[in-house]
Amino acid sequence: MTTLPPPAARYSLAADEYLFVEVSEEMTLEAFFRALSITQRLRELALPGLIEICPANASYQVRYDPDRISAQTLIDTLETLDAEVAARQRKTLTTRVVEVPVLYDDPWTRETLMRFRDRHQDPSGTDLDYAAQINGLPDAEAFIAAHSGNPWFVSMVGFVAGLPFMYQMVPRERQLQVPKYLRPRTDTPKQTVGYGGCFSCIYSVRGAGGYQMFGITPMPIYDPSGQQPHIDDSMIFFRPGDIVLHRAIDRATYDRLDAEAKAGRFQPRVASFDFDLDAFSRDPDAVAEQVKEVLHAH
Amino acid sequence: MRIDVIKPGLATSIQDLGRQGYYHLGIPPSGGMDQRSLRAANLLLGNPEGAAVLECALLGPELRFEHACCVAVCGAEMSPKVDARPQPLNTVFEVPAGATLSFDFVRAGARAYLAVAGGFDVPEALGSRSTYALGGLGGLEGRPLQAGDQLTTLTPAAPARVGRALPEPLIPRFAKAYRLRVVPGIYAHRLEAHSQERFYAETWTVASEADRVGYRLKGGSTLSFLEREPPFGAGNDPSNIVDACYPIGSIQVPSGSEPIILHRDAVSGGGYAMIGTVISADMDWVGQIQPHQSVRFEAVDLEQALAARREYQDTLAALRQMP
Figure 1 (cartoon, rainbow over the protein chains, first blue to last red):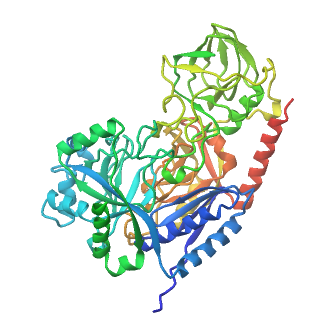
Figure 2 (tube, helix red, strand yellow; figure 1 turned 90 degrees about the horizontal axis):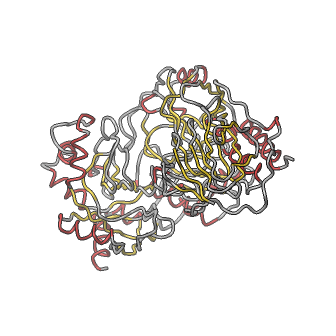
């Protein structure tokens, strides 16, 4: 079997300390996987002078000390790593599957979205109603079923501390897509499950935001005070490459899990998983089923 | 050693040199926006140059000192006063026990750095004492100062020398108009050629939204992006990209108007095209620009950025060797 070489990445100097690398202009699982693999290898090399290695959805960024490593040496290294990653026989990633419980259509995001209705495309309904409508789904229930029915890759962590961007693991023709608000809100509840473009996210802190709001999770994902047993010393739960399954929960379950989180006793359901990109490309639904199985067997 | 916050000032926060290694998880470096002035204030006192200080933006705080303490104020020209008596900038002076330290209105620059002998004592978070307010991390309870707060200081390793002053050539002079050097790139190729030229030809004005996250600029022409079929996942506005990382110092132009320069409390990523990055040697100046002052951008290449970086390092070396 012959495969075409992937298009060359685009390297751009961001002044004297940052290198920006665009793997692909459009979002694809392959571009994300390539950026993640290159940055993982770069981290393993532990070259002197590298300060921050930041994978993103279809690009990545490196902060370096130009007094210790030159931009050209860094670019040469990254081109070599890119070729190495492309030449791999098996494109696999050992990662974890995480279940995120979500109270969809909760009272807190509902109150917030009503306050900012003048900034929304469709002031007559809720964000869920709008998302269902523009994705050709009959109602909010159907949208929730689609959102919680397939796994997601954490393709980037950022914007603010610990916020995961998630990319749905389904073929492109089945991707949910929802535009951001017309004008950003000045408020979003903490742990809101949001949506913008082809990405779902979880707001780690209360604050401004432009993504549609669908629900809220009781699961803490950012822990600056160090009280959550499932979050390590980095204070941040998610890592790029994590696989997420959203599980719709009712209000009673939300209240119980929220009480556990407030008492520092919340434990998410997590299982180890070996992801294979080629297997996924051949049969995404089969891989999605495996993800659900490992989680439920756990 | 206890210090009581009587008035917090406009936006006063504990900062040091900042934290590294967490930007890939969305935690920005934070730290003093004008690192050179922060270091200068510490070096005057004989502190470690990265000791925690108070960064005081535009309107300074009012602080009551329980015990006598040596302090130094560098950066913006906001003259300190002890019980209403004026004190020199860029010079070590003593605040007597029970006295109140306050500040005059700012005459030039935007941020003054108040260092105390020993440095401020708050727990380190992810390797730094710097406040990151968006994430509620570091500093004092992860937020700017409030009236009623109590600050404590660490014990100095050696006594400070009252009257020790920055040599004249090492004192920065703040203007009302700034020239910032920028390496064009990242998504600059998505701009129309005339917009690219105009960005560097026009004079911009700093908007009132100018804080530790970023500086918004107004007054220039709206920039046009090239027409294109939106890439999958990018969003429909021509200034949108598939969400990516933002370098500190990068300039984004949402919908083509009002460019934003990200600074040390930056959002770490997002979906707006960046058209260039302010060189590291000029980032301290950005933190000293007041709202309504003017900025022009000058396009430079990597070699020029590295030359400016060496000059900046020479200045830091001179600060470390001052008498």
